[in-house]
Image (cartoon, rainbow, N blue to C red):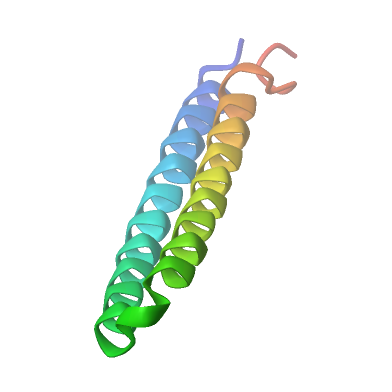
Length: 83
């Protein structure tokens, strides 16, 4: 096992999860603030806005899970580590 490749895999894993978390946090905050702003402007559309907000947040969370899968693949299924 080459320690340089293993170290690069660990760093790439950390970057993948870190960047995914930063992007998710920013997008969730923006989405929630815009939804609250929309509810304040049009209280009658609260149910529709809330449903769209929850669906959007679920899709965002799915993207973070994809980032986790990529990070785990970099860490545990890296073909270059065991060559």
